[in-house]
Amino acid sequence: MTVLIPVDSTNRDECVIASIEENKSWAFVTLDGGKISKIEFVERREDISVWIDAVVVINELEYVWPFMDEGIIALIAPTQKSIDEIVEAFLFKDLHDFTV
Image (cartoon, helix red, strand yellow):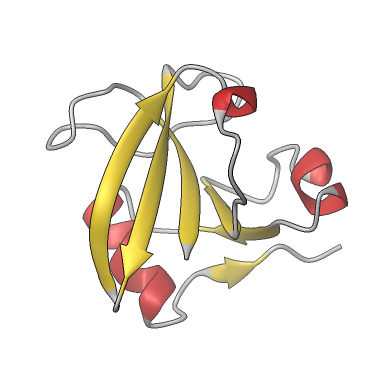
């Protein structure tokens, strides 16, 4: 399972979710057995050549249609900020669906 999160830096321990328009990087998180197995930071999401299962954004105003057109699930992290908080909420299905 893979999750893409727009973040404000490439520092694993300090970065928080950011708006797609203002993000400094993308955190590409690979999950295995309900745990984070790998986190890669990329400047452009187009640099990711493997399947992305879900993208998590900061609010419902984010422009997620290109992701949805590619069959990627778009979710909202209403209160979660760090990668760990977002992944935990993702695993427990506590993130909000992006309503169309």
